[in-house]
Length: 393
Image 1 (cartoon, one colour):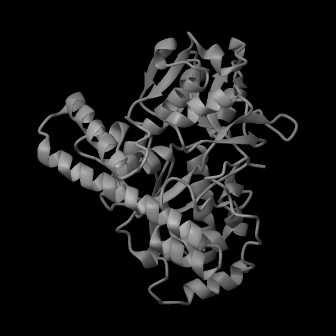
Image 2 (spheres, rainbow, N blue to C red):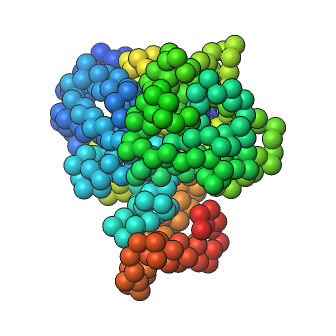
Image 3 (cartoon, rainbow, N blue to C red):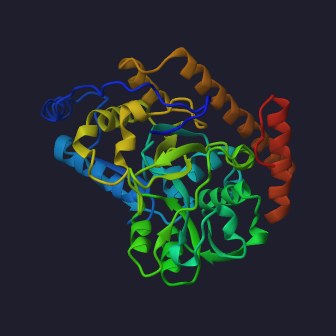
């Protein structure tokens, strides 16, 4: 069971609405209302073989079999590759990670470049499963703790701030930095994990349920997940100072894990289904409704997919929910005033960031590192003036 802190807690378990799939199919396919899903919907997702991609495919099968809706899943090897089609309107949604949701909202790392800036993204649903998101290492190295990564080869995925920031935070848990390890660059998530199998690198970040993690586990090198002990208060303070979206979790699902062999580590919602604030409210409502009510149809179809259940949703996370999703949650009685206040505060944060970005563009004609440095200063100043924690500087 997940261990959540006071500001990121799941709802108390409640029964998912008892909607029979056949009845749901008749309801949706027979309706011509504005709340109906189109016959084809497109998402971006992680690389083929990743936990996010596998889950999207399983959810797509449920949509097709029950509602006649084709879900086209476009794999993207990094956050930017997944975000561009969403930003440009070539897909309606993205099943992504913390990079293209939280870091995109914050306008940091790759999203601090002049062509990006803070993004007004919104959540529909997210998966909070019995799995963790952490650094996996080759078992043949004899690593037992995060501190043992010192001097080892660690994967850096170009164009994927979420993966890289997560590793940075986990290294910080052990009071390490990238200067204490050997950074090895890879073009994508899958390539990084293949690099461990091929002895090109020793460690990379992933969900414990990732297909690549299972491949490493079955390879001659084997797989080990170093723990982040939950009673290490100083370590967790260091970790959360850089990655506030992480929470302690005991994982029983994933490569090398079981109820008897759990991983004491970190987790956050993954994947996260997002869109932009400008996405049509009726479409978001329909997509959210379909995924909640069809959950029994895709539950168990892929490792970690149980995290999409309604009773596992965290309505006070670090990225706001879309108004269309909120409308559905209100309709079924799981949204409350506390969640709305939290959501409103997050929307306000996005507005502060957007205003700072417009000022930045008007004032600065710099490029590259000079632009990013000026933006990070402007960003921190604007957030602090509004009484908000910049987190990144």
